[in-house]
Length: 88
Image 1 (cartoon, one colour):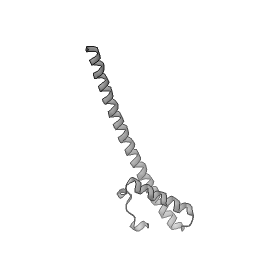
Image 2: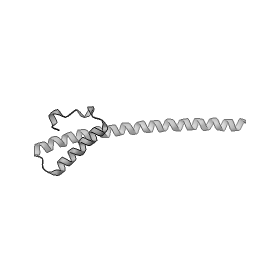
Image 3: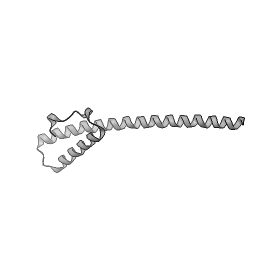
Image 4: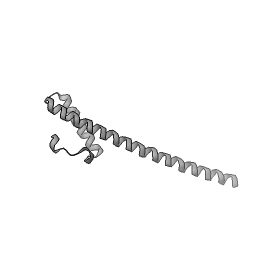
């Protein structure tokens, strides 16, 4: 995929961005690219890496929030059970 017709990173799903980044790494490791193409792909790879890191951080924040909500719900349920045992 050449730089000119590559979709913007924001349009890619996490899986698509990761797949493209893996392809870039393979191409760079092959040593068969010209300097200019290597630089262009490296720059694209950095953009993709930052996007992937941001998506992972966002997902981690969502998981942390959900776990916190579940813990609060469990604490509330335990308090209700404890009150029920005391009055019963």
